Length: 113
Length: 114
Image (cartoon, chains in turn orange, cyan):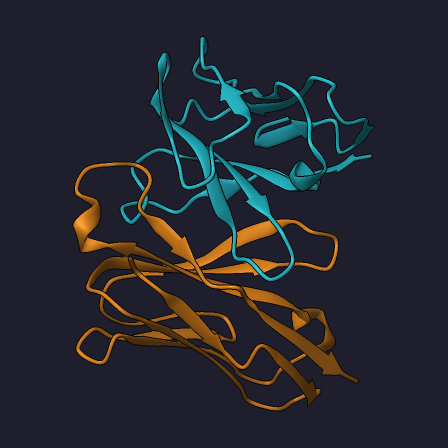
């Protein structure tokens, strides 16, 4: 079974700080997703990646397949970035099935003004 | 409006009652999913569907029933609600299988079973 661990579980930072959230997983994967869940509860997909690095605005996601590790970075953090960030992976053992995502428990980020 | 919607957004029911949570998407995505989110757990898959009339169990299917007679709708029924089914339920959809495409999530339904 693929285990997905996120760290830290909780993070409080000041506006403007550089933020890093980590995700580690235990088996080979075909893809990794980063999701954002706002205080109101809505979940949006930020990135889907299988190698290298992706950037969208102030958000950067990286993945190291050999080390089974991904990081989500936020540059110039802002209070509106306060949310729960969730990592999810699809195992290479899932085959063609649709049930392959395993989710981490999330990192609760608070950015103080 | 285009997107994925869930109804109701909030529901309080009693143990033993049948409850149906609705999910509707306007993109004609092939795949639809039901997840539950509980404190101390990541999102857990209840049921999924790869197309109309094709459904299959996820990680935590006991006590739930789904159907998918139309591509755009994927209702989730709790046949006889239990307190352990108190949770926030999210519906999601995607055009391709997980890992090949991002998933789009509905706003969630907060269900309380008394």
